[in-house]
Length: 583
View 1 (cartoon, rainbow, N blue to C red):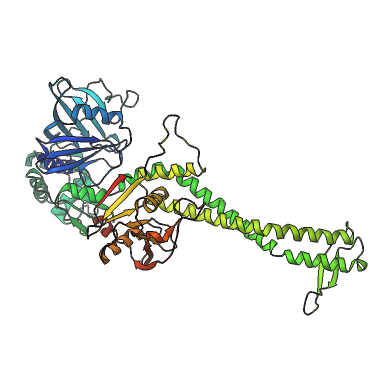
View 2 (tube, one colour):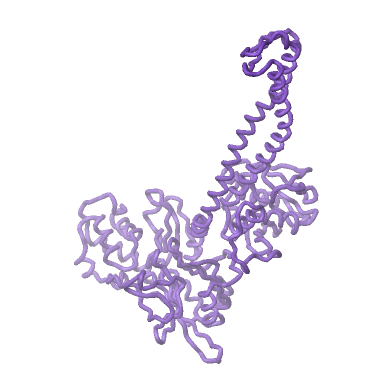
């Protein structure tokens, strides 16, 4: 992974088609990301601008995002100053990972005003800053930097904007042969390090590519002295492509098996190579769901721990119930012992520790040894065994009831764990709401901030290759909504057979084998068997699916099903057009 100055230059080059375009909508789906909907020569498009500390990036996106009910303050400010505005200029600062987007808009009084969106793709220091270019005054930043955080610069409303510290490196596009020869070291490894330390915008990945083009290695293994001219020519071959904006976006695995992406062709990367038409397509594919999964992991940790603990408690309870069941199954033995003792009271004395009696219930009339309490009379010993018999006989019904409930709890927790494994940020909140409704968690919402009862859960909608809508529920609230509310009686319902997973509904009475196969793929992919092969998927009409009274959320029974077997194909799932919406 190398979002360096060259990738930033490729992004800015691609964004040139947006100059003169209009920012029609602005959303902020989370704490790090802003999505700008643009109307320009290329038509409507969505630009993702992310100041994520782990995955900062800028690129066009085809993904859909669930936005919060109330827009964050930074989003509201961007809307006020930039929504409806015209993009006048988009440029990179030198070869740094900094992009300036200048926007012209008419304010409330009809006067023309200009604002600048500064995008700093600087790892954990990444930021998105809105400022007044005429005065350099910051209007706000998506991440505030206070004097207690940084003594170099402050990112707060009202302060003057200060750019990130300069690294005082050479611009590789302007480097001369003299500068290059003067500073060059003698070995490949040192040369690669020198490139990174001397030129702005060059990552270790690109430095390794230059040494590879010069000497056929990645600069990490050899220490021999090399010819300076070879290195200069390799450096220029890379920089000439960048200078002329000749990009070949690609992804692939390096020698260590690490997956990387680049805006230029990497001759040293030969495994799992994939090329793209644009840098946006490359970055969208490379990052995929990484950023969201990272955020989900952070947000889901407490929920995951709670559900795993609940599951462990129920597994332990199940073991104890099975032990109780084994004891309770001996109830008849205690009844027989009591009756044998009563029939033989004349043969037993108080103080005896055991009695050996003929078991007249046994076909072979075998002798049975019955333990006795020496402090009790023979009659009291018999009564003790009758009491034990009655206790276990009465507890059998309770044990069987508890066994059923405990197994149901374990299945429920398994379902939740499976749902969390593929949950988005909005899915997590719905799972948390469900646990609150079921009484497992306290409602953390503040007074006046509780969700409205008529709020509809998120719906994940895919479109098959035949143009048929396929609905997928990724948690129990969504599953119930899709199956019980949105689907019609003659729609087709799918679910993995005896495996925790999503409810999938084909919203049509007429479809071909391709749609059925793709729907089954979705059911298998969004299930606990995602990594398995030949996953059994049941399908039937919605009219044959029903929820038993008192059942856990998402639990249904069904009949008249048929079963087909599929092996989940992630590439196929990603190729299906999809959208996410509320209800």
